[in-house]
Amino acid sequence: MNLRLAAALALAVLLGGQAPNNPAPGKAADREFQECPECLQMVGIPAGKFLMGSPAHEPGRFDSEGPQHAVTIKAFALSKYPVTSEQFLAFLAATGYQPQPCNPLLMLGWKQFKRGLAATPTDVEPPRWPAVCLDWKDAEAFIAWVNQKARAAHPEIGNRNPYRLPSEAEWEYAARAGTTTARWWGQDIGSGHANCNGCGSQWDNRLLGPVDAFAPNAFGLAGMLGNAWEWTADSGIPVMSARRPTAGPGQKGSAPATPSAAAPGTMCRSLSAARRVSARQRTARTRIMIIPH
Image (tube, rainbow, N blue to C red; front, side, top):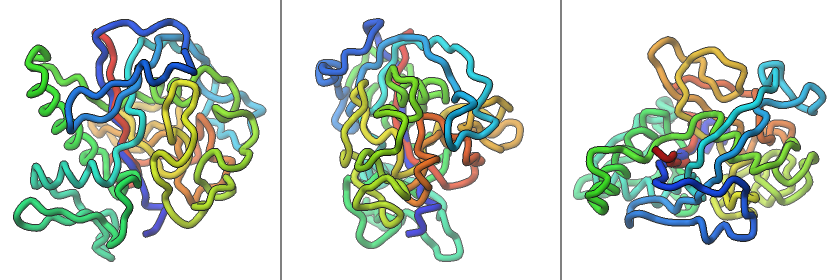
């Protein structure tokens, strides 16, 4: 698979209660929940305030990552992992949904067969790989299915759709997990913290890695940096962040800072403006989130 086409899904769910004001790194398991068999494993993220963007002196920084500005975030929950190939296959088999190929020339894409059978873009794709070769529309279709399953399991939800893609601000807040360095584990790329070209993992510049291959950040979220790009919910309104799309008016969807396994380590940061994508491009994965009413 061409890793530069890889992209995965990230979803968000609205929380009914208020999370604590400060993160509790050692107690992430106490903030985890799953609302239905088809729903993703979620992690409660505390409300807080952070400095969005990157400082002018940060190595690898792009001009569009500034100026830095303070952003207040409400408590929410984010999926602990990106959507996996196994989870996206279950969605395809249950609904018959057919994503468009991410490479029409090679006909590389998810495949639908009869009798509720579906297949991954490549012949051999581990079930714990992030679901890639998807666009923003595919992410929204998956989220709509999860919302349907959540409402069926919890009638008290009513007609609400609690699950959605995170905004770029929510994504960056979750990726930083209370830190101000270029990466949640520190300023330097180090070795063995993520999957990128130069991250020191066994998959660097070759393959995707499993969604649970690396240690989670202080919020308990795994794979926030590296491996594949992630979709966010923001529309194509020009702003400073890297994760806005180049889509025209009325189009939505943008890829956040997480670079692919082929991207250099300077792009593997909590905020990277190195890449902007349109909602029509099939270049990002998906993660889910929730915000309190």
